Length: 89
Image 1 (cartoon, helix red, strand yellow):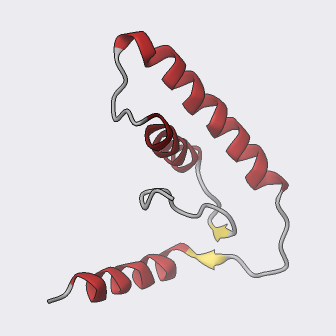
Image 2 (cartoon, one colour; image 1 turned 90 degrees about the vertical axis):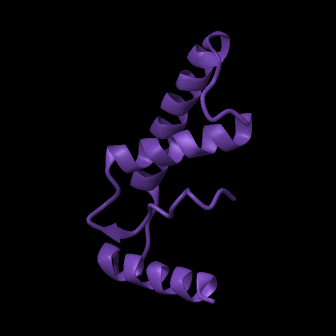
């Protein structure tokens, strides 16, 4: 999985449209191999991003859990700590 795609489910506050679109963009980039598609492929690329974003939003709205929502700041701090440990000398 692409390391830039973050978990979006069960957070407080919930994922925004921008976060969903960013994850969709990263997914399409990874699958297609394009960072920026050519003009010939741009329409298909952007259509895929839009469709995946819509499906992702639908999925996130349909999921259910009994677990309490995770705190975004707390999870970000944990990720920074893991990164610092991984890349420290």
